[in-house]
Length: 301
Image (tube, rainbow, N blue to C red; front, side, top):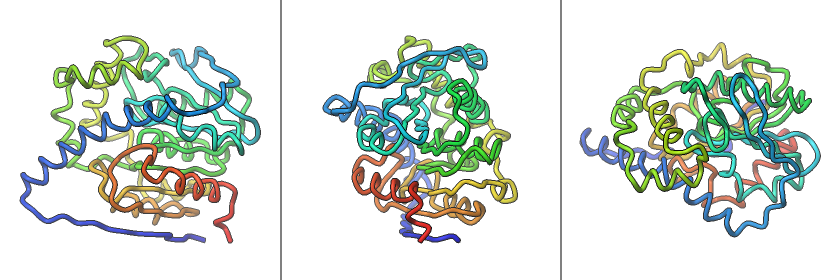
C-alpha cells in the first residue's frame, strides 16, 4: 500500500537568466553549508564513543567506517563532498534503536579512491563489500543525496538485502538544468574559503579535495550511472520513505514524485521551504521521530 503523506509544491516565476543565477547561488550554498552546519553541531554533540573506528581494504581502496550502538544494522550514507560525520547530530538518538554503520564513501573523508573516478553504482558495490566484511546480510539504510542514490543502486543490485530505506534529496537521473550548472564547477573554481571548509572533512590533503570537485564536475557527462526507469525501480522490494525539500536546487519535486510512483512500497514526504541540506537540520527532531516510526513499520497501519 502506498501513501502520500504531504506534498507542498512551490513554483517561482521569473526570467530564465534570473532563475539560473539563483540556482547557481543556491547550489554553492548547498555544497558547503551542510558540511559546516553538521560539524558545528557535532562539536557540541554528546554522541557516544564509537564501538569501532576502522579502515579496511575493499575493492581496490581503503574504506573508513564507524559503528555505534547495538541492534539491527542501520547504514547511514552521506552526500557527495561530505563524510559520515554529517550524521553526527543524529547518532546518539538513532543508536538507541540500531547498530549504526557509518562509512566514508569512496574518496571522501578518510576513505581513499586510487581510481580517481566516482559512480554511485561502484559506491553501492563498495558498501556491500563493507557489509560482507562485517558479516551483515539484511539491513536498513538512510542516505542523503549521493548516499540516497547509492542506496537506490543497492536496492536494485541485491533487492533481498535492503529491508527498508530512507532517501533524502536523492534522484534517479540528472536533469539537463543540473548538467548545465555543473559546467562551472571545476577544481579551478574552488575558492580558498571552500578549500578551507572541505579540509575539515577530507583527511588526505588538497589533492583529494580537488579530485572530488573534478568528479562532481564529471557528473555533467554521466548518463549510465543514475539512469533508472520505472520498470527498474519496480524491482525494489525495500519499504522506502522518500524525503525531499520543495526548493531543492539540484532536483525538482517532480523527480521524487516519479520515484514514489515507480517504487512499489514507498511513501513520499515533501518538506516545505528548504533546499538540499543533508541531513535536515532545521526539522531534525521531527525528522528523526518520523523516520524512526517509518523504520519500525508503524506507517504500515
